[in-house]
Image 1: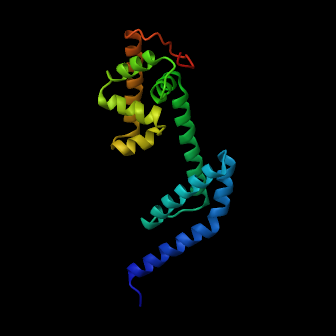
Image 2: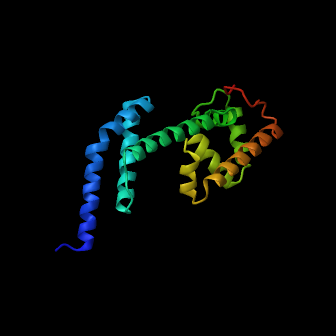
Image 3: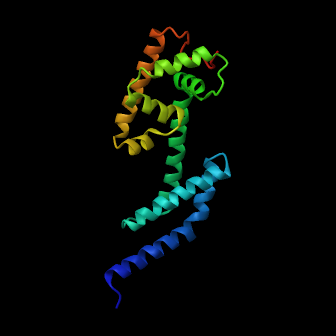
Length: 180
């Protein structure tokens, strides 16, 4: 007779095998419809299977609905991240900091100086979300704080950055779509 642990392990193995055999094709088709490129879809499905395996390992269950929601949630997270990154101030800061040779070096230096006035925590949030493109949930996991705290602190950091730019008379209007 097999032990309870061996039976549980066999059940997890069968669940994982079923997951791969039954859900991979419809989940991938859905991901390909939701994302623009096959590479993006494949990456999300890879993440879904890793997470699904963890759920099964921890005694949970995964079905097609779970997989499709996972894909949809990843798309929503990406869209939120893109909307945040596309807002006027983060775009401006991002372009200024990423430029290896800024057309206006004085402006780049001034922006970096103003960013230096943020606290280390504020600057970290601006860099992670606006420059590196992480979603608030990802940053929350990295920093070990709630997603709501990340959003609120990020919003405050951007408000402070706007005020600092204005006070420094950098000459940039929020809403400008380029660094000139």
